[in-house]
Image (tube, rainbow, N blue to C red; front, side, top):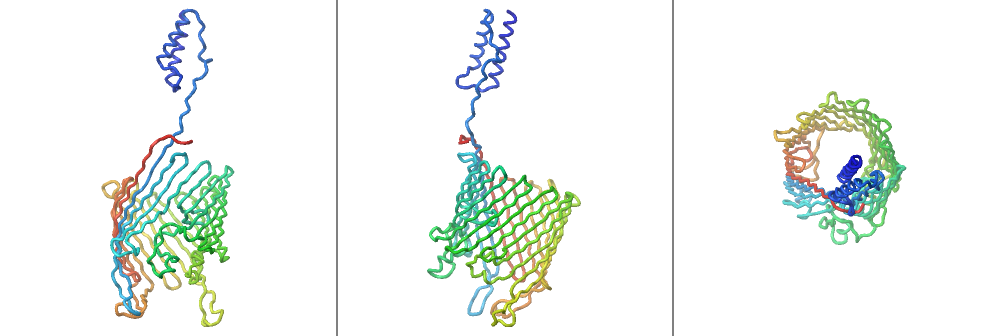
Length: 525
């Protein structure tokens, strides 16, 4: 009897432990029912009935949880108000100009919104838009403008990424293509992937729409609506990229892009890109784009980074660019520039102690272009010419204060071609103030020109012809900002005087508010 009672007690304790650790389904017994069942079993044992081994009982059925979504809505509101006062050359008659003061006082409001896991795992919606109101002279030729920068739906799952709507693509040779359409990418488990995109090219709501202006009257009175022009057929872009990626060490791709305007080929590019990091202390990256319409290389870039020790970074780079090929082939400005350039150089960054960094760099540039000869009437009146230039710079940056929040830096840069050039000295600082998150910012730039000329057309304020002006250019700015992660508020003022821009005063007030809302709800797995 005593052994039977102990066995019954053990069964009751085990049942209570299972009840406390496992969830109950709809048909499971509650604690009271389980205790009653244990008492009944003990009574049965007392009468000599066999007790069932708990280990032989079927396991409890665990309830499958319903799919849940960790939905997040995040965003940013950014308000900025600017003030600019500067001289501007205005025509006051045939061949006569006058310098008059111009005030520009625009106010911008920008909003960013992102919602993740919207009803379905991996589904998100993103939006960014801005509006501007000019409170002084009409900088936009209108008092107010507005433009949606992004508005798209995105779905990501198991190596797939699909975006539909207004967006920008940076894959391969697209480099920031703004379009209304579809982007899709998929990367296989074998690390081979493909990206495709297509849609209508977007014209921002700034600047004239030449195709609308031309049928009526020339000028800047008619601006784009901020959306792609669905009425004007033929402004579209299609492209794609095939790539291979392996363990963060290798990434290589081949891409194509075609952009049309009014059914005419505006740009057709073929590109390759490579990112190669075989060792933790050595990496190489490069890319090139070939313009298939002009059969010329638009640009090529190669960069090497070597970090033999944590305190030392060595880098070398090469760049070739043809500025003409960045313009639309349908633009009249594309015929005005025939200049290409190559630049090669390197940089050294040294951190002798944790809070101090020294840097030095040098780049040499070669300009090649067509130059008119002394016989302009002959067909071969242009000949190739080459100029050389360079850029050398160096400086130091130091961090200080709690959590290294303060920073001071000084830099020197010299740019020149042949015997002409400019020296620039820059000093700046970010200084934390007593209150956590409050900081003051100040910068000063001094430009020393080897030679500077002011050569306006005709007469300006009664003075005609070219005249030599000061060789010094000065820009100073100072500001005060406060931020706590959720909000940032502040402003700055600047004043500049150069041989070419004359005097200009600017000011800015800024208010940024970040918000982040999370909630859990049911959704599709």
